[in-house]
Length: 271
Image (cartoon, rainbow, N blue to C red; front, side):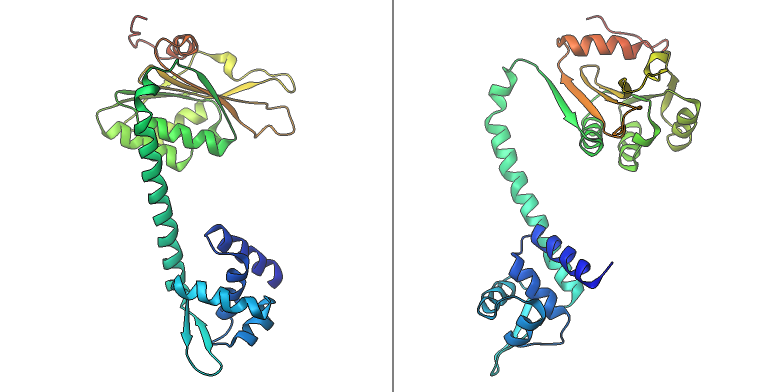
């Protein structure tokens, strides 16, 4: 990776953390100097000299740059550890503020949400679906039933949440479509009930571009997520999912009965 590439990547990351481009470039220039004047910062960063002063002023206000009031003025960046700590705190504060705003909006609309007709939603991409899976497991009140068809879906975060659920007062049962998956589940989660699903149609055999099931998650027997992908396609790794909630939702009832077929000798509540 070239020096220019590293610089550009660093500038992009600093922008994602809230700095403007000129501010990011000036800060990176100062990390290369023990101290420097506006002229020296301009020469390294290629930021217009008239804009260097504004950028430095912002960086100083954010605790990323120190100023020595000499003639001409000199500037220096704070240490890397201090800078990253400052940026991390700033990012964390923004997340906390956003969380409070979102919770306020959610609480304001809670009453109307209870009266809303239950719906089916879709998710796209493994990261988004994995995040929702972890969130649903974390929020389970009584039972988690997870059927894993694709072993690559077993992330560390998911294992952590399943382990926490099992150590609490929640029932956790996990099905693996293959012996390899079931063996890993038993090793990683020795205190979790595992089962061998009888739903052989989940894994094929598949024709090219035919959809296959990747995971089925049932939480508290009323919230369900089912993922799918296309093993034979060029973008076979792109997972799609539907997410539905509500015991009276027809999709949930149907898929609950399907997944329950793999939970041998477990009592199925009446609908």
